[in-house]
Amino acid sequence: MKTLLILRHAKSSWKKPDLPDHDRPLNKRGKKEAPKVGQYLKEKDLVPDLILCSTARRAMETAQAVADACGFEGKVDYQKDLYLSEPAIYLDILHCLPDEARRVMVVGHNPDVEELLTMLTEVDEHLTTSALAVVDLPISSWEELNEATDGKLQILWVPRQV
Image (cartoon, rainbow, N blue to C red; front, top):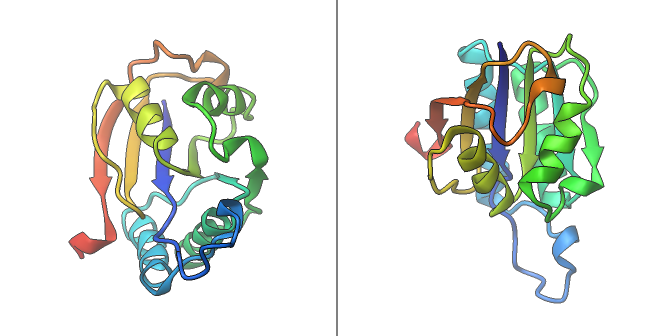
């Protein structure tokens, strides 16, 4: 059994409209909520073995805040292909992971992360900023992961629930 933690980046700033989308930072609320995700992961014993993240600034800031707050000891793996991509790209990246990683978190963007959640669970949920979906996957190797994998959504959590 593998577990996939699907996290939409925290709330980003629109204060500088001329700033390229890729370079938008977190806003005040995003900086407050991202560590709450990490605290939640730590409290629920869901600290990931690996973190994969889009290269967009808001996603990277989210991933780092979550990693720091949950006590993640590894290095966040930034993947440019997770920026404004499709669920199939997420699957391609996950497919290549080492099997020692039992629990993996991906930090990305909508609609990509929502579509990934729906593909793997057949659950159609809107993922607000900082939303975390915990999906159990009935696979023993990441190589087995594909569009037909029948994952189960175990938890859908947002920091505003706290």
